[in-house]
Figure 1 (spheres, rainbow, N blue to C red):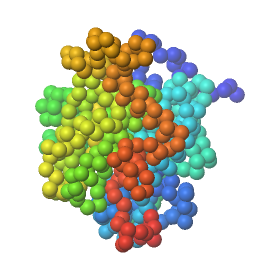
Figure 2 (cartoon, one colour):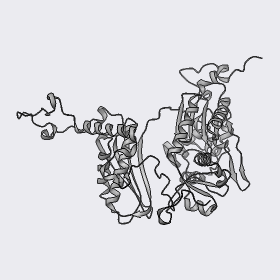
Figure 3 (cartoon, one colour):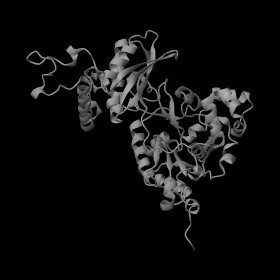
Figure 4 (cartoon, helix red, strand yellow):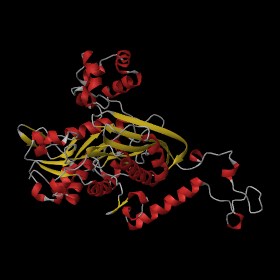
Length: 473
């Protein structure tokens, strides 16, 4: 019997001038209830029980939950307090970002074995372009099942995979492949769902408009006023009417999606566009000095991540949310890029000092955007202040920096970059809390703000400040 021939081999190579997007084979791999599954992996006694992962305090948010918890209506992004009301007998555990990131790296290592074209979207999902891998590895559907099997066998975790000619269709397919939870209990999913070329509209058009990227409650309400309820309804709306309803760019985008058009490539090296840190506090805070220290702590963490990405940023943004949920954002754009914590903190503090915090701060955040590679685009602003530009030579002539051997003295930006690099080297060798700003030194050492530190809100406030990490068991 002759060997099976893939569709790519039957149709031949893509024409270089006008590639047929219908020949693309895009996979979307999405872990099933990832954070909850990791907690069950590490503590098998949680298996089969309603489990909620996230901020366990009264201001926390659900990051993930087991399918057993979803039976009761619990879902991600829901306030933890609401989840407790819906499922009071659930087990509530705080999230462990470091552990999830560790397993995420292992998952991506598995994906890389099938194709180098892997675009990570988050810790628990990724796009893969396997168009060029079919000849060597097998048809896309077989690759999808192989990925699912490898992750299950090697990591003891489950995932769902969608296969389609376009990214957004592959994501919708992976959603259709997932387990479901409802009044009848937990129903297993199909594991892999394939949308073949020519089947896109048959799969897409019966879906509700909310399934499309970019259709939130406000957009959905506008579209429903036009009598649009399904993606098929949306595809029938004339472009000019759609653009007049939701805006030109957004309308054009939704019209293309409704027709199954999504030419975006899988991008293995996604450029970092912004970096931010924020924290929700268990109680509203009014201590300005303490909050200024928090800004330094966040700025130090943001700067570390900016440097790790090999970037500098020009725009620093401050975010303040008060107890009544009023949110203020303030930003400042610098002429030169910054990537050290002290500089970012200085800008954030200046923005913060103009804000009245007597109302009580619920959330505080610092972000850096307008990122670029260090170089001419991020060079330090030149100055006409000759006294600051170059100190006098010993003989009274300006221009010599006084550095040994007559060498030019490094600019302030260069000195800050060198100091930041030294800090990074020490932390890489001895740990993140081994070195930091003196203002962050406390009885327990340096209070470093780590990535994933309370991203879903504060933990529970146990009586007396002590207690185990789990509740509701």
